[in-house]
Length: 339
Image (tube, rainbow, N blue to C red; front, top):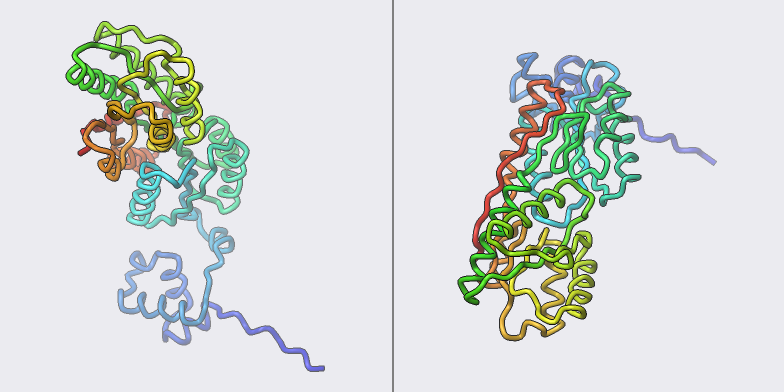
């Protein structure tokens, strides 16, 4: 029986012969260094097309060993399923490519074990920098990366051992709460406390948002009972369950709510629709998150849009400057009425 030999893998020397150029020119194009070598755009495009046609795949690990820097930049994110994190990923990739960097992104589902696993995988590819977005324990990731000589920047949630870029959660929550309180007073003719729903009571962002929520009430002369602050997590099911339990124990339902994300808002709206407890009118809402489709709910909602472009500009400013000071940069969010 005749054994068929596996097809020969295309090499840069094969591509150089096909393109009528040198192997070093092919290597420069495939590694993204062709402009520095003053290789023409026409030749770079020809080599790239030939590489695709021949099924050539750059050996990243071997390539890294031949260079001081891998030009790979990594990011971990907790979720893909809301506009905020999706926008972060999209703009991260665009800004990375503008700098000649290759972006790698993975979702860790707010799982500390997955975060560490993802960081280790990124390090195995010798990333030049890792951006930890919304990490549950950013300092642990910093320590892991530092042991390999890799820089880290925290985004969305701060840490204490690397530079961090976050939203001004306190200021955004203060303004959002003020607006919803004013909307309720204008419609119902009196002051009453709002309900706070969603988020994790142990993370920095939720702590700051609760603080802004409470201070806005205090400034309005309104007392907030502890039972009205429900940091039940971000999942829609948890928000729906918390709403159901609140309604079972409350004689009067709140006429206004502060919802800590569009993910939690899904659970809140599901409960409102299924329970029928607000048949006489949907409560005034404030959501510390943003999605244009929320306008379909009506004109009774205020939203906080986190300024993702400025946050990512700050992150890459830190990377470009080589800053390692573990300072926290706070970017003011945008509060706007939907509808």
